[in-house]
Length: 49
Image (cartoon, rainbow, N blue to C red):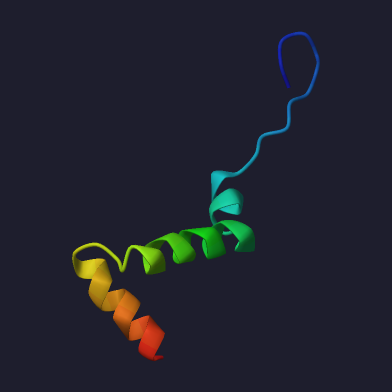
C-alpha cells in the first residue's frame, strides 16, 4: 500500500524466469549458439539425453 491509500501489485521476477515461454526461448538461444564455454558441455549432454 502506498501513502495515498492505493495498492500496487508486485510481480515476482522468478515467475518471469520460470515461465515456460521464457525457458524455451532461452534454451533455443543457447542451443543455437552451441553454448558458451562450459555450457557447451551441458548443451551436448542435454541433447544426448
